[in-house]
Length: 392
Figure 1 (tube, rainbow, N blue to C red):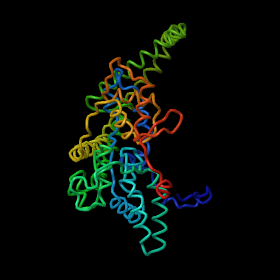
Figure 2 (figure 1 turned 45 degrees about the vertical axis):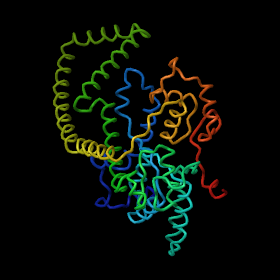
Figure 3 (figure 1 turned 135 degrees about the vertical axis):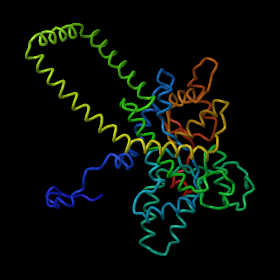
Figure 4 (figure 1 turned 180 degrees about the vertical axis):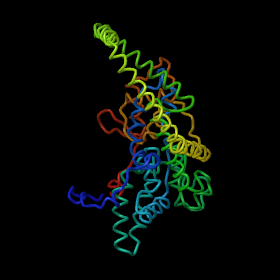
C-alpha cells in the first residue's frame, strides 16, 4: 500500500484529491466483504435456538464447502496478475463465504507450473503470491483409502480431487479441467460462479446491517422496529429496577420545564425544525435505498438462486461423528469440543437426553483418524501444511 507523509498529502492539488466514496461504491467495494467475515463469525457464535433463531438463520451468510483443482488455482493466480488486484476467489476468501479444500496433489502441481514459467520476474512474483496469499487459505487433505478411478475418470491423475470431493461431502468442485467438468460436480463457469457468490455475500452483508440497524425495508422492518421497541422497554425496566429514583426524578424535571412558557415555545420551534430536517433525511434515505441499496440486494438474491442451482446436496448426517464431520468441514477451522457439541445440536442432531456428552464426543473424535487435535481441547479436520507436504 502506498504511504504518504502529511507534508506530501498537503501538496496534492485540490483537483486530484480523491472524492469521498459514494454509497454505491461502499456497498460494492472490498471493505464490506472484509467486514463480512467478523460479522458472520459473531452471528454463528450466538445461540440459534432462542427466540431470535429464525432471524439469525436468515442473516447468516452462505458458506460453500468447495474442492478446487490445481488448474483453476493456477489460472486464478494468472488472473490476479492480469487485473492487478484480488480476484473473485480471493474476495470470497476474505468474506469467509468459501471454505476451499484441495487434494494434496494440487500443492505440487501449482508450484510445478509456476516453476516452469520462463519469465524469472513473473515466476518469482507468482510463487511469492501463491505461498503468501493462497496457501494460508487452502486446506490440503490427503487422499485416504479411496478408489483409484472414481466416477470413471478419463485421467487417473484427477482422482485425488474427486476423492476429496466425495470424502469431504463438498458442495462443489471448482475446476477448469474438462475431464473434471464433464462429471458435472461443479459449475461449468467457475469464475462466474465465484462472482455470483461475491454478489450474494455483499447482498447478505448489506441486508444484515440494515436489518440489525432497524432500517431494512419490507417485512423485516416491522420485526426490526418491534425488536428495537422491546429493547428500549427492557432498558427502561433495567434502569427502574437498579436506579428506581432516576425515572421519577427525570419525569418531575421535564414536567417543571414544560410549565415555563419559554420552554414550551423553544420546544415548539425545535420540534418544527426537527420535523423538517427528518423529512429531508427520510427523502434522501429513500432515494439512496432505491438507487444504491436495493440493486445490491436484488442482484445478490438473483446470484443466490444461480448458486443454489449449481450446488450438490450434502448427505444428511445420521451419527454423531457424521454431524461432527459436517460441522468441522464447513467451519474450515479448529473448534473446541463444547462449540462442536453446540453446533451439532444446531445442525439437527437429536441425542436422547437433548445434550451431547463432551466426554463421549472426545472419544468419538479421537477414534476417527479424519480428525486431529490441536491442543486446548480444540479439534479440526486433518489437513496437511505445505511443510508437511514437501517432507512427505
